[in-house]
Length: 449
Image 1: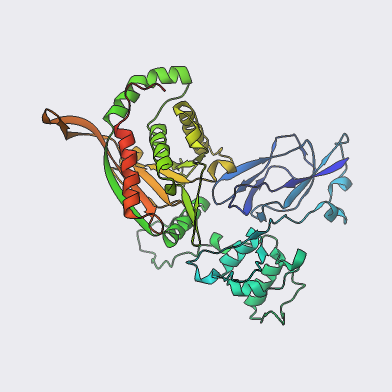
Image 2: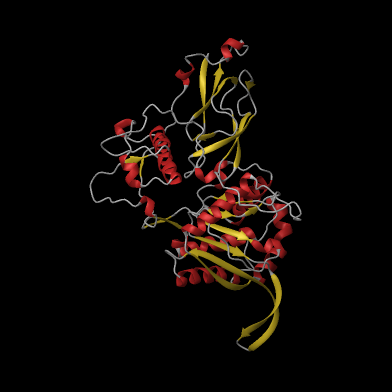
């Protein structure tokens, strides 16, 4: 007999915790390998977690609605030949903590954004104190300055500040206790709640002053809408948004797709939409102007060499999610089409994996799907740009030729690019936008797919 720990999996580079939505099993239940054992949620996607082994649930360490750090043991599973175990075997014993390990917090040097007054820090000396991403996340959410963080006495390895240390300090601060580098007055025996709720999850309700005669309907935001609301506001507070617009003649592309779409579906087994064609043009343009695939960390610009293109997808409940096509620059049109259709179908069916929404470097939103001619999209942090594609409409246009001007019916659309003016000026934003236009307008009608 052996016990296997079920670990809260890593759900993306920037995700430090997840919420348990539902347990499908309880202690004493048998579980098959790869059978769904629980549902979890992050600020990006809901996901099912399968069992890594076949066995019997020995212990569940967190309950539904608990917020759990990545790497924490959330359950133990008994594996072996003897699966018909008694209630005594199932119930946690006094030694159950032998199978529990504290979540591993990878230590990284923290270099805060330069524009954040709360987290300004001088690195003039040679000593850099290390903090785990979880500690940094809690400090930011609780409004703890870097000076305060420096003065918290750490009980971890090499005196590092652990999650318990910072939550102890938060509780002590709430009781107006004084903490400094030489005299710690907080209670070192304080045991913070495991299911710590970060501030970003708590959105205070707006003041409602409607009387009983008001003809109104009040709807509570669901969890995803609250998160979308929070992220949109945070993006506006983080980036200096600027939007540029361009007009694009996509007649050649429309005619080519119309000509090949039936044969494409027969040969490839997928319907080809305009989205993979747009992504193809965006990828070619980013290769010429790589700053559009970057992020800002303090006064540093991080250029992302892997071109991972997010595509905003509307869900049946009216919410929005952004699955990501990884390494889009390495895919041909058939590969892009399969990725676009597969991710869109998974999103609408609620089957996206956590990894499907992470590590995006640029985002495309096709607002033309809903009839909009143009829009001013909000940047998907920590990216620095997002492109919106408007509806394609037939319009009379002036065509310039060597034999003179003429008027013709053309398939036209507007493209808009919102970008972070901290690092992308209007000149680069417009040049990149027009590069995408050029790629689409010079579409080769004789190309193969």
